[in-house]
Length: 322
Image (cartoon, rainbow, N blue to C red; front, side, top):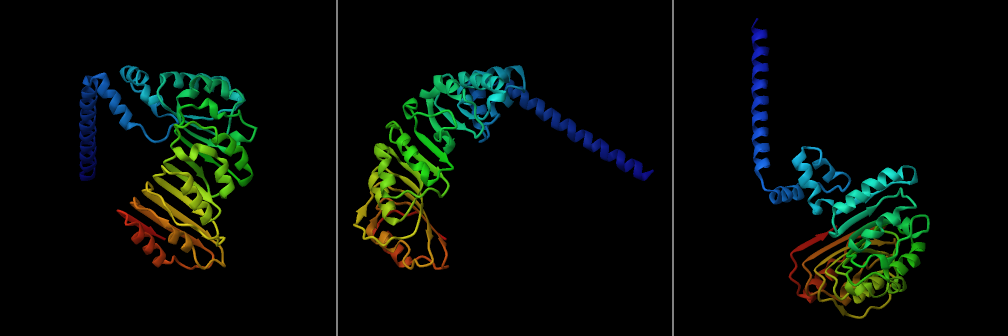
């Protein structure tokens, strides 16, 4: 009997907790119902998760008012991930077109997946001038995908390219060299290819506009050349290959604030980046990260790094060495 009473009490307590939760939920819903549309729109914007797949669509399924507010808030529809092949293209194209129209000309962040339709270009064409952020596989430059043209992207600010190899550089360089002066960020996601000095120069005038870069270069000389090409650079994440021991002239970059170096050196390399650190001055540097992937197990020459910081007289706030 005591056991029955105990379990009954447990059920009663659980029921009370559920009722309290429901009352709280109703109270919150009531408060949300009273929020002006503008406030509710701002709440939706701040609550969106990072993933661009379905986020705003979920808001349209809660209730009629939430649907009306979500559909009427263009900023919710500015991020889109596109992935569909020809087999299911008609239904996918209808959904993508509706999504893009809801953005109402706002700046777009677009990611193109690996599965594609040959009709993709015609879908995106009316919205190309609004694309500011583009993340795309290198396959879109290899002829198997609907071709991308730099002239179609007059407002582009950030470009991320995935999966490149050295043989892709000429095609990518031709595309990037025609990008508009609105460009600010360029990222190559992976450690290949490694650009040499000639490769870097082939990308043309876009370097002068960039403030944020993620890239891999063949050697410290190419790294120094990259800095020379980018007078407005503020943040650089760079993978550097083996040292060819070519002489370097002193160079000062006045705007670089954040630098992350990952060095990939060979078993015979005994002075990793020593010449580079001795040639470089970074008077505005605030964050420095230096990481080494070494075959020999050797570590950084900290004296060279200390000399760089002392010579630069920079307002360093963060130093990470690995």
